[in-house]
Image (tube, rainbow, N blue to C red; front, side):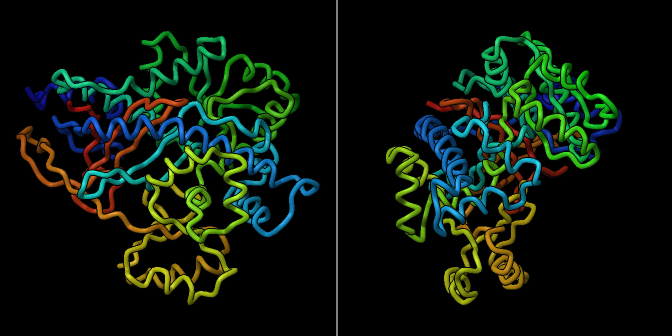
Length: 426
């Protein structure tokens, strides 16, 4: 039996995400629905989990090797080094080479579902804590209408396990000033972790005083692992404290500071659709053939746009009109433009000159699903919605799934979107 409007509303309001008038910024359409994954889709995601882990670890070791001029040389190694620094603030260039094979405790992967039900990777983000709160909220609303179906354990559960693995029940979520929009979501994660016996402290970069002797601040931050090392622009001194603390081994992160693991260029490197023999040899030296084969089956053809090839090459590649141009470092639909857009040619020409700052990816025809939703008056209706399926992977397992759905093909978080949990049908 589907939950009522009042039941769903109570869960959402109890989370606190709409308190103090924040529904204007964080609103979404309430729904009694869940995404129903087939048993085969769930099994495919479970099979992907260890392959993703191995690929992220291998890419990390490849990037660390590319920074050693006494060990490697050549244009392909140079490309890898350049890609790992593109769009990444200089403060990270050295520290992201530390602990080369280490992967984030949770890796966020966005999928698109084609009309046949096959899931395709649209983005891999191993350097982003955003979405953990929404995943937690979706799990809460999902439980209202689970109806005995199986589900994944939950992103917060896996975060709690990762914190306990550090030998503590405390952690710090440091967020940059430009991330303050996500604070209501962080509070949901904090509340969920509290119920799991974990004390998560929230701290803005503006809360950290970095004048004079900063040893006291380093002492305080070293008492518990931090979730991640966000890009910070208002408190540059804090960047320095974190870098020094990490380099000397006093600070630890659940998401190691490796921004390149959030670059869409990683998908192009893993696919190697241009069949660069040196890149292929490098990939097989650091990643098992089984893991590469598995992850390549999930990634649509993806090319790193580079000025080493003439503009005509890129124009011919996407001449059939079924490609998407994506900035390497961006979130959601930002920096994404479809070849059907009148601005596409100009954007592609600009990307070619920028050298490695964008990828071209074969467009996936997004399947529309029918979901129920509540109107502002609480009436239940149904419509066709396009989805973006966000899967949080933890270690070699699937942690949970949160679905963003819109009636526009450009699916992203907005006040007219649905936020749904997922269940596994038999």
